[in-house]
Image 1: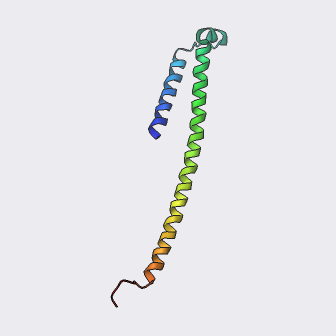
Image 2 (image 1 turned 90 degrees about the vertical axis):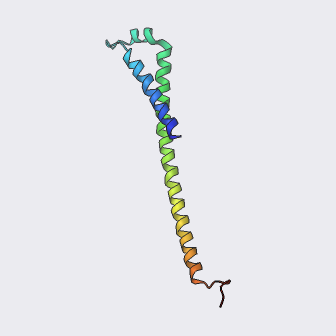
Image 3 (image 1 turned 90 degrees about the horizontal axis):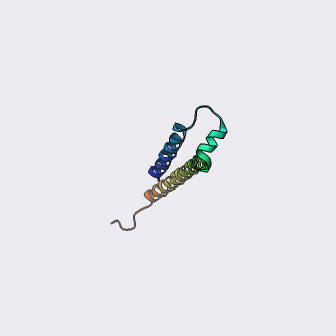
Length: 96
């Protein structure tokens, strides 16, 4: 999953780089629209959408990781407590 997110970021960066590389320097929006038109708008929207999705997914993954660590820590504490309790009990199968 991590590699796929990295691949999406690379593709978005390459698209943005290609868009910037061919952008006119004069800064006038009308020639830019005439040159790029709908394709430029679509590429810009795709890059914006991908950035926002990555931000959401990063936040969600972080929350899930914290929850898993919390659950694992609780489970380990409970198991340790149970094993310590069992250790103090006599073994039923041992020879007396």
